[in-house]
Amino acid sequence: MAALLISHGADVNLRCANERTALHEAAKLGRQNMVKLMLASGAHPDPQSSYGFTPLALAAQSGHTEIMKILLRKGANALGQASDSSSILLEAASGGNPDSIALLLEYGADANIPKNSGHLPIHVAADRGHLLALKILVPVTDFVAIKQSGISPVHCAAAGAHPECLELLIQAGFDVNFMLDQRVRKHYDDQRKSALYFAVSNGDLPSVKLLLSAGALPNQDPVNCLQIALRMGNYELISLLLRHGANVNYFCRVNPLHFPSALQYTLKDEVMLRMLLNYGYDTERCFDCPHGDKVHLFYTFEGWTSTVIKDTMFCEVITLSWLQHLSGKVVRVMLDYVDQVQICSKLKAVLQKQALWSEIHNILNICESLSKDLL
Image (cartoon, rainbow, N blue to C red; front, side):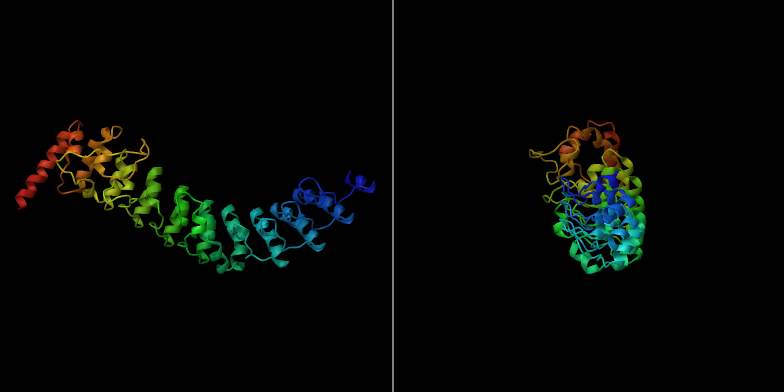
């Protein structure tokens, strides 16, 4: 049909609304015979669409290597870039066909040309999990270009949950503690920095294991990786982070008297609570209330909900109406990890209404007696 139309004068270089020609469509769809027909009928081999894509770029996206060969032999530019500066090699990395990538490199494509976002072909291959493509791109990508981009392919592999790509990058010597540049971090509300944070956020245990084993530091992000794991309730992930030095006493500082951030996710889960306590959680701090037996000042809980706890003193949190029923169990567990503590008036008033108060009261009395005997 196409040949018939061409024989009756159809314009092979006619452009549609987005400035794409029939050659664009044939290349994208992998129609090799159609591509040959268009070129033989006078089609321009390298027209750009309104987005700057050429038929070669569209063929690269879809991994149509044979069509790419035809276009390149006809003079298509392997170094072309789209309107967002995305190179044809980057489009090939997105498609993931290693033969397409190797072909472009043979024709002089540069793996160190970023698109406007700063991403390089290696970033795209890592993010998409294209292992074979990544193997080709690693040795032809300069670290200087990666540093200038502000993001490591390690971040991309972690974000995409591709542990096999992570392993390759680690073996190739990529730094697992390369931190996102500020200009990249600003796009994330949590201001994340590390590749480990991406893996933890995904609940991707294999990737987390790889990163930690390679020396990833667990306390580098504004929001601690441990806090993310606690929020997810992932016991294995929590245990793994704790074994590799995650800070159990992490908190978001707002004022000098605060409710440690990690604790808020363990109030309903004794297993997670004991995990923190077993790894050195500063339990005594929870009972360090400056008011003691005195009446507590009115506290404003602006911005609080049943799922959002802002930083403040432990006694102010655990005595909230929606958490009071947990106070007895939480305090009872904590008493296993302290020698002697004083219960402030506000916390005591709530505990006295709990079923475990009698047991808590006895423990406090015993600890006080032992302390006096030691004196």
